[in-house]
Length: 212
Image (cartoon, rainbow, N blue to C red; front, side, top):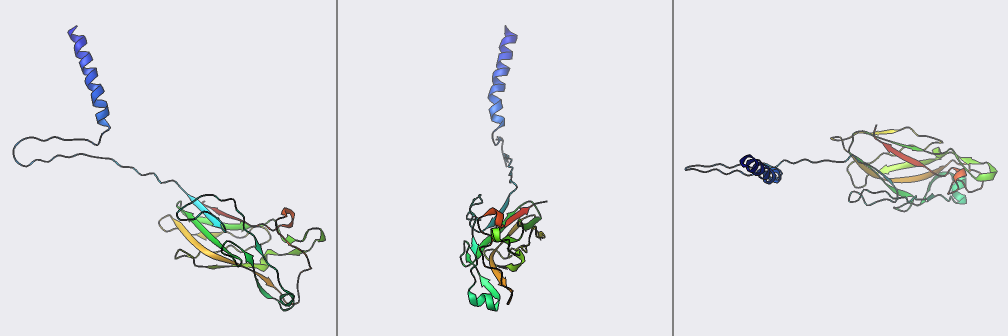
């Protein structure tokens, strides 16, 4: 009976001690003169790996990094005079208006590759006429950060990837991307509606950011 009482006492004491092990700790010192008591707390921080790409309408970074399914539209409508003289044609649309889009890349996993791709040259549907993507240029100018995000060169197909080099393994670059349609004097395309929302007319550019 005595052994049973001792065993039960030890088990009860262990049950009291277990939750105390999860606490920050305590120390009691007694005696005369200078005393020192210590306690310890252990901390850990887990940072998720994130890759964020925005071109046009999107979440309000840097406060909100979230997906947004919106697809902006940039439209070029050259005048008769511009068709004759050639030269740059400004766009209409974009989240910043005037053919200008917000562009941003944020990543915390090292180098980021940024590229663009199209299904092929824009066409006007049944007529079979085309406009090459190389006639649309993208100018990058600084926005919120100190480093302007460069824009991939548009092509009939995949563009060459741009390498975004990190600072302390973090890439944080943005820009205003201004799109311009460049006409060549005396070489105006045939009349028609090229690209647009009809998938078969190849009006969609897909931008891709990746961390190798």
